[in-house]
Image 1 (cartoon, rainbow, N blue to C red):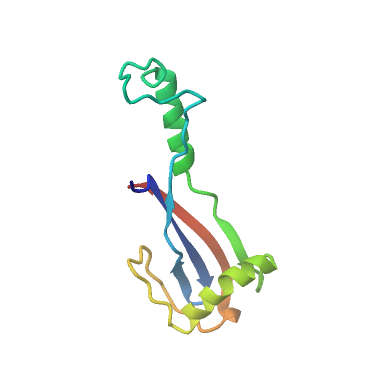
Image 2: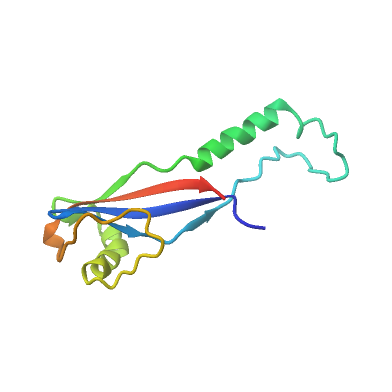
Length: 133
């Protein structure tokens, strides 16, 4: 069985020459079970709860929650990372981008300029899109 939705995360790097993007690994998401303590029976097609409006409404709410992307997170500003943990996690990715060893596969956003060192970077924001399969 495949995943229910995808989380497509990327770094938006604003620099003196424009904006560059680094795609992060695609995350597979799964809707949680909303059985509310009831036993799901494949035998009983007429199960009152699973065919109710309340259950369908709850499912729609869960889908909306799961498909709503997180707010953009600024991870680099004023020539420094917001915290050490973010620096350890994202600095190697940005270094690969600077050295042009970072190969984008299926890049959704196009760079509008290039940068050659961190001094040119103004701000880095982590963003994400979520979509169903």
